[in-house]
Every structure is written in structure tokens, then in C-alpha cells.
Image (tube, rainbow, N blue to C red; front, top):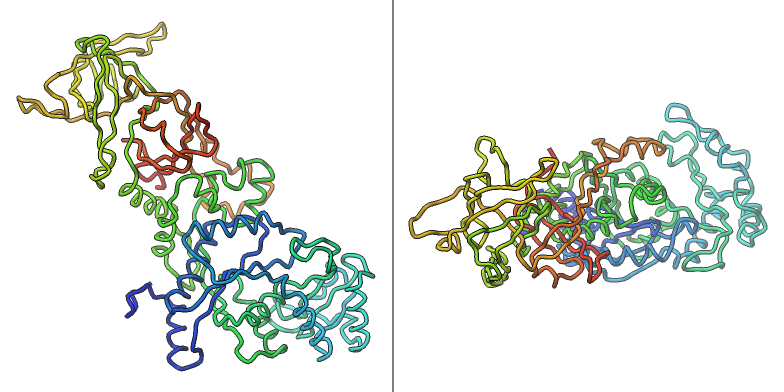
Length: 552
């Protein structure tokens, strides 16, 4: 993408729009985001949302939200509510909310119009027979034996379908186009089918429902959409999209423009496959933080603005490609580095006794909340004779360039004092359980009168620290392109270490005030947010992203 002369991001879609506006083909820009409410949105939808809404915004137009709810067997109001929440979370506001089901009367009239024009017929072939008659990419299809029914017979049969006279699958209404077309989508596609299912919007009013390929272009047209922006998988559907518009007749038909989908390595961006993960309980639900659903990313602590930044960096093009997940993590990390408050949390506590610190004494140590935002001030952490550090911050026999604690070694405690290890205790297995240290009372705040320096600075947990649970998330799949995995083999591809739970971790006392979804940088560890599973007596933090990329 390039910067346009308006100062806003430009791409090939905008180049097309610029040209058409300049030539007067269009005088306005109207887009729509048209999800089917049959699942939760994922990161791939975020790209479409950004393209639809930001394109309208750039040209001073409007973007509507339309639910393409033509398949009642898979749709639910639960998904409608979740989709609206996700779009708002990303920071977008639609002009209007529409449902394709609101146009069912209009779509039915369009179907009747096609029948009367001799461009649609009722077909009695089964789904398997229709598939067989359609032919292949290298061989033409053959006409249905019911293709030449009279207009009167087709009108009668379609009315009887609508009246509920026939069972599901007994008959369909098909467009009459060209069974020898090289484009399979043009080989007399089904435009209405029988389904005796209650609809989440229209109830039991209908027992025949339009197919997506029929409803979608006509919904765009009736809403006066000027640019129907969609992913590249619909490129072969464009001739059919235009055929319906031409046959029904619209003065200002919308133009379909396709862009490449967002594909991320090690991720599934398919509602159907995500449903399998949820149904088979390979994840805890649609908002499992390992999922790339928008609600999963939100629960994990990803800021909405970082996702928008990622979409911008990934770019808009016509060429399919796979984006490295590390780019998304980088965008999250960059934003949280600037905005997240700092806190000290010890994952694997190791007891430290400071032998020369007075027994019974405590003091408040001030630790900066965020060095990037000085005005946020400092937190107070209680220091005492007994504290805790990470087990990994002590070695009996240090390796080369090890700058943390070891017998005789000195480190700086974050915000507090210099500490020197004098000895250590072990249990019957030889595991270190306690280390004994001395502190330099003149080193508070990180400097000493003699000007000596230490190379290592470590975090710690003080006297008023409390236990928390940490959930460390990693990639859900071990395979770079899990979309290629057969459904029945999903479970074998799941990373067994995608979730590691740490209990008994110690957090500084200020974190008791955290609210659900609050995000922090745990010093030297990564970025974490408070999970909704937390209770007042048990705080649970999800790792949003590590300090350094793990997506090599």
C-alpha cells in the first residue's frame, strides 16, 4: 500500500475507486460488511472489516452492516450479537444494520421475475444428481431433464414449494444460464431450496430460502451499495453476481472488487473449522485465547488498535500470501510497550532471606508504573527481610556471562537495593529452597556512594505479595498450515504445549486492584491481562505476548 495524496493509505481498490470517481462512473462511495451469522468473527474478518469501513471513511461515504442470513439451519442470534460487539471493539460504527432476511419478499419477487422471463426453472433432481449433471472443469455439464418446463408449470411448482407441499430436498429453483460454461458457477446454479426450518428473524413465515449467491448481489443493489468488496474466493462468482443484477435490472448496479484473504501461519481462519475445534472441545470455547477469533484475541489481551495496525502492515493486494504471525505479535508488543503499566510477578518463587535486614521491619519501595508515561507515577511495593525471586535468577554454579545471583554474586533488585548472595539451603533432593543474602543499605534506588555497578537487575516479590495463576499461551497448532489438515486429524496437529498453567506465582500487591481485561507488562516476562475467570480470591492472568518473539 502507498500513501495517497489525501494522506490516507491507498491500495489497488482505492485506485479503482479514484478512477471511477474521476470519470464520473460513480459519484459516491457506499460499502457494506456482510457476515453470515453462523459463527464468531476471526482475524481474517478483521481485514474485511477494515477494508469496508476505512474505504467508506476515506471517501466520505457510508458503510452498513448486513447479516447475510439466508441459511437458518446454521445461524443464530448469538452470532449476530457477537459480530456487532466485535465490530464495535475494533473501533468501527456502521451507518445502518440490515438483514438479508428483511428482503425475503423482494427476493421472492425477483425469483418470480426470472421464472416469467424464462430464466429460472424448478428442478426435481437430487443434490447428488445436480452435482453429476454439472460436469467437471474439463467437461461440460448437461441440461436437467426439467429445464424446459413451461413458465406456467414452474410458477405453479414454485408456489407449491412455498406453500410447504414438498419435503426438504424434493425440489429446487435453478437459474437457467449455460451448462457448457467454463465457469462452473454459471451452470444453472440453485437459487432457492426447500427448508422447513424456523428462521431467527422471520420465524416460520418461509419454508423456501434463497441461496447466498442469489441474495447477496440483490441485497447489495437494493441497499444502493456502490462497491461490493469481498475476498478473492468470490472472484469466480463475479459473473454470476453480475448476471443476477443484469437480469433483474438495476439503474446503478454495484461493482464487485476482490482482494486476497488474510492467511496466517499456524492458524485456522475458517468458521467451519473453528466450529470443529469448539465442538470437539480441543479449545475451551470461541473465546479461547489460543483462537484467532476476535473474541479470543480480545480475551488474550490484544488491543484492537494493534490488530488494525497489523491489517495495515499486512497490506491489501490481489495476490494470495501467508503472513507470519510474528508480525501480529510485533504490533501487539509495540503498542503494549508504550501503554501497559509495569508490575513485578515471580513465576517460580525462590525464598530469599536478607540476613542483615532488621527483623520485623518493612518499607515501601517505589517502582515506576510506566517509563513511557512518567505522569502515571509509581507503585509502592513492600520490602522486608524475606522476599522471593525467580528460581532461574539463582545458580549454584553460574555459567559464563550469567549476571544474576550465585554464591558471592551481586545483583540489583528492581527499585530497591543491591543484594549479595552469601549461602543457600537445599532439601533432601538437593534442590535449592532458600538463599541467604546481605543488602547494601546505601544502594537504595540503584546507586551507591562508591559508584560501583552491577550487571544484573532482577524483579522480586515482597512481603505483601499474593498468589496468582498464570496461563501461558502458545500457538495452537504445530503445523504451519493447519488449514490443509483433514478435519478428522485436527487433534493430532494441536500443540500439547499451547497452554501451560502456572499456579502459586507471586504478584505485587497493587495488582489486587486489577479489573478484567486490564493489561500489564510483567517485568522481564511478558504482557499479561486479567482473565474473566478470575474471582476476588483468585486472580488469573493470561499471557498476551512474550517480550520477545517466539514465532521464528
